[in-house]
Image (cartoon, rainbow, N blue to C red; front, side, top):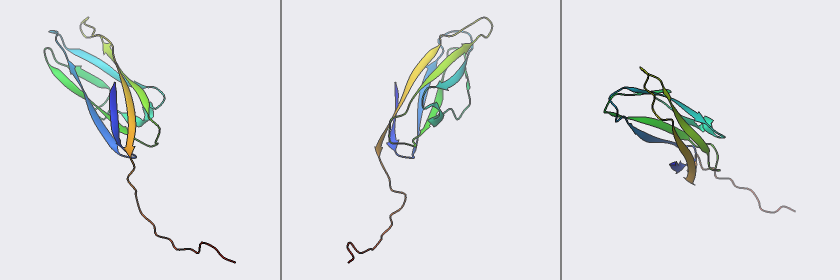
Length: 115
């Protein structure tokens, strides 16, 4: 589970590090699915390529729009490259709004009671 914690309307970025222990290049197609998948994004695109014996990071962005926790799933499905398939990877994405920053403060005066 990857947890995104921040203020309401803030954008939080998390990195998922992927390693390729094999001697062949791995290519994954990344997809976000679930109830709140629209609140999460993959700014570097949906294709992830990992060179042999290397590692790479996938950035996942979340922007909170509501106070309730958002949930989605990051699916990394391997594309066959030269007959080599990697394992399908899944990550649970959850958010929590810890505080609310006011966008503006307004001062008003009005009588409390009128006859």
